[in-house]
Length: 379
Picture 1 (spheres, rainbow, N blue to C red):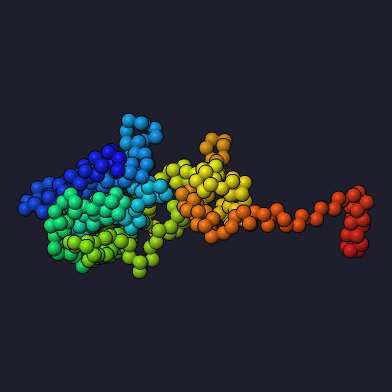
Picture 2: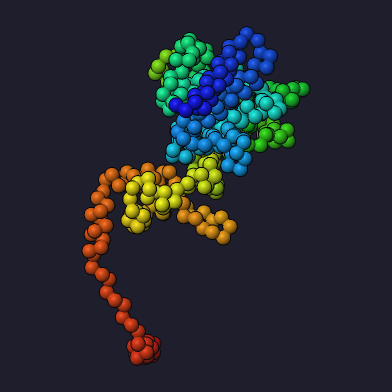
């Protein structure tokens, strides 16, 4: 492992230890904020370590002296083939954690104890998997096994956690209650989660929270107000030392990940990196990596209809120039196809196919005869 990646991983573990330490402390002053901030920092540094370990770059292309932020690290590790290590469920969980951290650091937020536990324990589980499977350095080498479980009590599911939280919020905004400010702080955690799942990074305003409070007073259930949050669930994993849980999407719900911009769809937004990062290969790049002649490779691409799949190919216009670009997924698809077929044989059979018959030239006399025939048919 490169020295920079090893150092980043070490710093990430430092932040993880501080997060777990603050979670298990006996007093609450600044506890929620400290846990969220340290967990968020731990994952940003870990993802950067993974990107560097896999020969990627964490430098901002526009400012060489500045590294990329959490969002771009997340998108690279989801959609760039060379560094990909996250599933869509992992991204949903980390997006939510990052959104809660933003609210905790830049304003104020109240997170109930069960909800904080779920994010802390799920973070330890995911951190352990990434550092072990991707970097080949199990977390147990750095920490005593006893530190891995954050606590021994696991909530049954997120829905029950949010049910209890919503009941408390309804009580706060009920008649004769003067706890509207407290209600906003507790609602902010749910609203921030919903916004992050919709791909929005802006903080939730008091006016937006007041609209939610009005819907609560009309008797609407939290599942109708926060449709994206309602799809999150807990997936316990008993494999390995300590407790492990993952935050996933409920497959029974009618909410799925769809391409960005799909009209009329309720989506959990897992955005890709910018298009040139996702479609980061030209035909020449594919040819070099697959060790196939460009002409033959282009013929295979057209034969298999690769360019009709938006996950594989896109025309990207920059100024007046149009670039034909292919994605890392396209590289994987072509590599699999080449392993299954005999490209040289297919290419040879293509050249031996009989030529198409020459087109008949249309003489003036032929055109006149055709016009006369049409007049006869109409008469």
